[in-house]
Amino acid sequence: MAKKTNFMDKSVAESKWKTKTVDGKRLMICMNSNLEDSKWSDFAPEDGVCENWSEVGHKTTAALCWECTSRSVNNIKA
Ligand SMILES: [Zn+2]
Image (cartoon, rainbow, N blue to C red; front, side, top):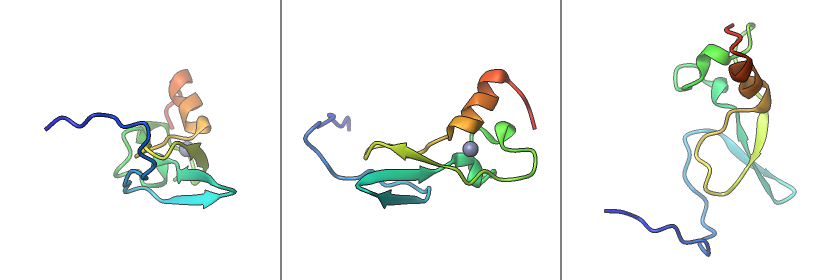
């Protein structure tokens, strides 16, 4: 069953990742806060998990913070 994207739909997508709302903005914790569930655990900080929050849209279900993103771009493995 294909779902059409309804741009008027302001409901928030469910996510298994922690989210919070600050000043009306939706923030989501970096996927590397849980290395077992992260697709990008190779790029987690050397000293463990990443607990950075990123601003996301209301349909975002997973986020990788800019620090982990830049590690993946530079291909630096922890
Ligand atoms: Zn991160």
